[in-house]
Amino acid sequence: MLNRRTLLRATAGAVATLGAPALRAQGERILLAQSAPFTGQAAQLGIQFHQGAKLYFGAVNAQGGVHRKPIELVRLDDGYEPDRCVENTRKLLAEDPVSLFGYIGTPTSVAALPLATSAKVPFFAPFTGAMALRAPFNRYAFHLRASYNDETELIVRQLTSLGLKKIAVFYQNDAYGQAGLSGVERALNALDTRPVATATVERNSVEVAAAVKKLVAAHPDGIVQIGAYKGCAAFIRAARAAGFGGTFFNVSFVGTQALADELGKDALGVVVSQVMPSPYSASRAIVREFVGAVARGGKDYQANFSSMEGYLAAKVITEGLRRGPARVSRDGLVAGLEGIGDDSFGGFNVSFSPNDHVASKYVELSMLTGDGRVRT
Image (tube, rainbow, N blue to C red; front, top):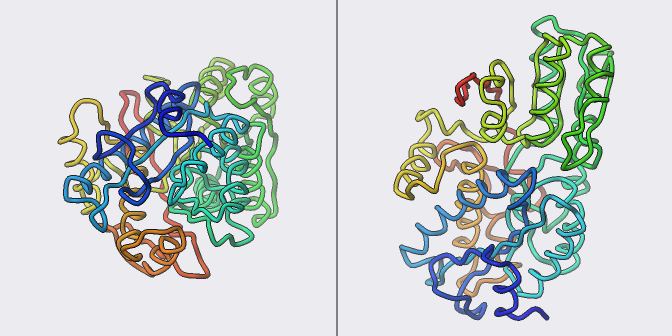
């Protein structure tokens, strides 16, 4: 078993302990564990989600925690690689967490969920909309966000409503890309059509020349992208340089702010589907709460869609813990989350039950400007 001293040393500063000077025995704390990319080409997704969660858990701990116990979140870097994620998950499970929390990505989550299920550990709020993690129903898997089917259906509906019928797909060559491609094909099949062309990029790669050549030659009206922000940014720049003048649509996993930062002025007009309330609109109470927390957190924190998702995930799992018994356990957390039923978290509607662990189908579209902003 990986002991606590070894875990702290092995993560080389990548362990976040919230509200306590050192890791305690499980009975004195509520331990959550996260494997996510904190380095590499998807790093901003892991960093920002973790920062958002850290903000909320820190506030909870400042008020005495849950059932008089602090919530502690430990993290390990998997670089968005499934094999590393599996290794991390085994190490984290050895620390006896109440739940695995906030895993980032489809290929990593698909690799980790069987380990969580075998250990009967809740797997809460993975940052992915893949149907492979949602069906068949799994008692230990809880999803905060809408599915990629929901996102791609809205994207296809928007494209076709504008009269743009020739749709191509640029997708990551792994479980995530396949999930997004399947969603696009499903939505197009309902309209009795199919993609005019498809092309791939490897995970953690920006080698897009072959994909650009293939898709631009098909003369699509719009290109749906199912990838991480660096690969998608490289494709957008290269496709435009090759003469493509159509619209780019991305699903939420791309990381909206990360994509905007990567593209700079080239972000103008790029569309991204969103599964969280916009952190740039104060119309919802949850956004006002979140933005206030970011301001109090200082310069190390950012208000964006990824950190918003981490904050909401922390808020919902905390509510599940509160609804569970004072003697915190995995089964108690499952019961507490299922007991949430239909509820609103500051204007973000959540629905959990013993037969349905998908909290939301909320999707909207946003557009990037050329100056790092997002319009919703």
